[in-house]
Length: 83
Image (cartoon, rainbow, N blue to C red):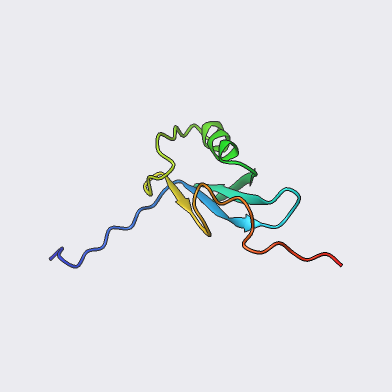
């Protein structure tokens, strides 16, 4: 019986949540390996291209998993306070 089967995407690219920094960045994983930091969506596309992955749709959950925000999220929820 497949009525209760829930499809779960397993994309090759994972973009983790925003990390505080100057500028803030997100860690990019490809095939479970950390490949670098992304400061913009262009950095994600560059990392994918370096791994031989063509990305046609950044919103496709079969292509990219966005953790802690979508492709428009590049600043932390709360900026750290300075003394």
